[in-house]
Length: 100
Image 1 (spheres, rainbow, N blue to C red):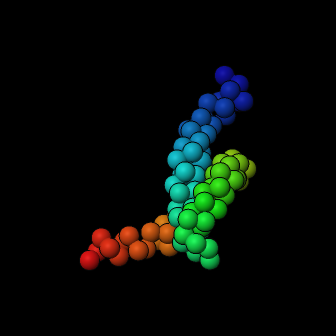
Image 2: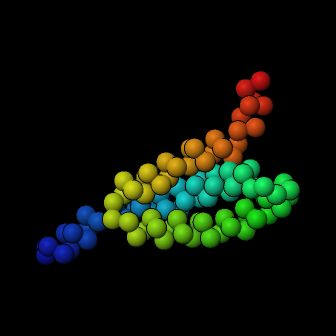
């Protein structure tokens, strides 16, 4: 087997992981980002949700492109990790209601 064939065969797990992180992690990031942005925008709630929802398409596309543009898979995982603080910001009132 040639060296390039071996390298391409070894690249499949990393590519599959990057694809899963880009698609699923990007969706989670976009969901949390949209919720946080809707909470933080100084607009009426309906207008804030509308503006955040319209921007979510751009955020998801940007995350997908960024996930394949960075050189390290750890950077993609760090980007997905930003979902947690964004989700806390976006869903803080609901979290407080469930804790009561």
